[in-house]
Each structure stands twice: as C-alpha cells, then as structure tokens.
Image (tube, rainbow, N blue to C red):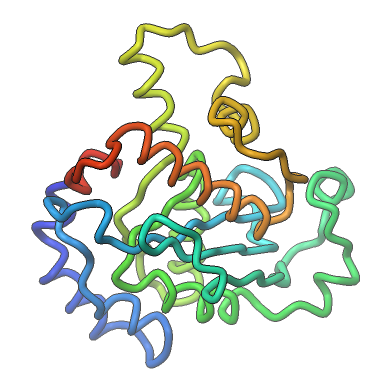
Length: 228
C-alpha cells in the first residue's frame, strides 16, 4: 500500500490524460490521502456490489450502493444506489440471491452510467468494503471494459480488519465468523436485510466506524494501519 501511494501522483496524472471527460477523469485526477494522515481526518466511501456471480471475468455488476463516511459518521446526503443493465442474461440462481428481477435490469442504465455516478464520489477518498477484494476485482474489470483503464483506489477491508483483531487476540476464527452480519453482531450493531447494495454499503460503513473506534479509540492513527 505504501508503494501505491508513492507512485500514485505520477501514475494518476498519466491515467487522467488517457481517461475520457467525465467522472472517470475526476476520479483519476484527484489526489488521495497520504498513508501517514490521521485516519479520523479522511473521508471514506463504503461500497457494495451485487453481481451475477463471484467471478469478475465471467460475471457482471448489476447493482452498486455507496455512502460517504465523514468525521467518522455516515453522511446520508452523499449516498446512492444504481441498478446496472448486464450484457448477459440474468440466471435464476443469482436472482434468488439478490432479488433483482429481469424486468428491473432491462430498464436499468448501462455499466458506464453506474461508474460515472460512483467514481466521482470515490475521487480523493478511501473505499471501504467487506471482503473488498471482490468489489475491487469487479470494479477493476468494469473500468477496463468501459474505459480500458485500471481501477486504483486506497482501500479498507472490514473483513481483514476483523481477522487481524481476532488473530491479535489469539481467538479462533470459526466458519462464518467473518461474514458481514456476524461481525456486526460482535459490535452489537443492528441486523439489516442483506443482499441490497445500498443497505449492505450502509452496514459496512457502520461496521468500519465501530471497528476503527474499537481499534484506535480517541487516539489518532495513520491511515496505513487500516488500509490493505
């Protein structure tokens, strides 16, 4: 992650020059926080995706949810939910999981529209996601497909934060213990209906705030201690 920040200023200018006008250029042109900055002074965006499967090469994004985290609080004035029309057919199996119908997706805008809404919100901020590797892989595949450019952003993974905490305590990590709902219960956070991108983004944002406060308390800590 430190290497990412060291090279980002030069690299983002190069990417911005290659990017088309619009949200993606704003995304690449805006500087990101330095890893030594106090995590409390940084803005974050909790992101969740609903997809047709778990393979970012074969499957597609069909829903994007996000909410801003500012001053260690959710800022509901900057949140959004966007359905995305896939190129392929929606399978019955995936529809059962995310409860998004074929008719809803047929009427939804294309992937580019979803990215043009999300990327400007992420510009200059840190992405937060639960099991963030999945979100990153799908957003990277989406940016490469639409813009022929990589998706690069500093990221906090609430699943990895919890795994580090449990290992530091020498606690056994049981099956299912790192699922979003299970980790939220460990912090006495309310239960929400899952498999809605905006609801899950809110749930992830709340969890991150609780984890950061538990890990850092009232003390300032550098961002690098939280990012992956």
